[in-house]
Image (cartoon, rainbow, N blue to C red):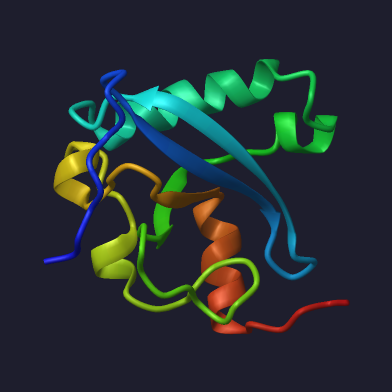
Amino acid sequence: MLFAPPAPMSGGATVTVRLVRSFEHRNFRPVVYRGVSLHQTAQEFLEFVKKDVALRNDLPPPFRRHTYDTMKIIHHPHGSKTNDLVISLEDDEKLILRPERTLREAGVAHETELALFYDADYRRYKENPVSVW
């Protein structure tokens, strides 16, 4: 069992979502969400983030218009980080969030970092993990 620090007294967790536009070009942007309920399903959070990203003026248009459909845990608080600069290609069964499970059931805790990406792009990159630049 991983240690997870308690959520802040405000009643929600802080979760960083890394928007991945291109794995090959290492093109991503982090967005921080505060007050996230860990009792919502992964699907509910995914839909919320997609709507929020589309309306954010602080993100370049390519990130706002990109297709996102999958979330994966890339870092737990106080845990080790991957050597890959964008996302770890391992443990998909355990780390990719299943839509019907709550964030807490999926292993998301306060200060967890997630990747949000298009699954077809991820599968293609996983077959040939070569960076372009």
